[in-house]
Length: 200
Image (tube, one colour):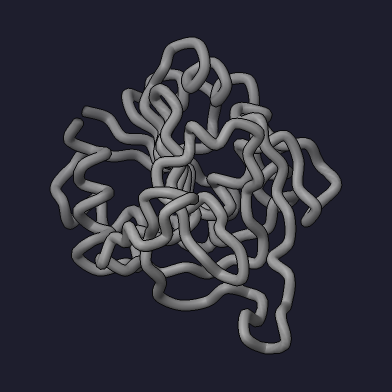
């Protein structure tokens, strides 16, 4: 199984690569259309800004290849943090359009009297339901972000997180798994999540 980690200027690219290597999977780091079109699974990492990642995609001429693989060929995609956010139509963080793969926009987390300072930086739990916050996944995951994805169709939200407001922590739509937190920095729970994506 050839796993492709997209290289478009994300600061956590090597952290993701180290986890994939630790798990023993074959992978390539790629930023050309030909490499992406040969991918059997794609990971789109992202400690970066919305416009920075989109600029990398445009400058490397991989916009069409990504959309071909994800939307037409239904290649499994794992999108992380800003990699998740650029799947949206647009973001208040930048001026460029996103990939438009998920019908959503990205909005800033609002500062709330220092109770929830932005960025959201640290460990948090996940909620299974927006309407039942008592349903908590005790496993904790590492977040680092100032924006969140506001989706038009909440049925695609698999897990929620809370930081002054409830926001999508995991989105699952067909072949797409999009994650706001950083599984590569979330110790055993995060490694298990990445392994599940690689093995399925």
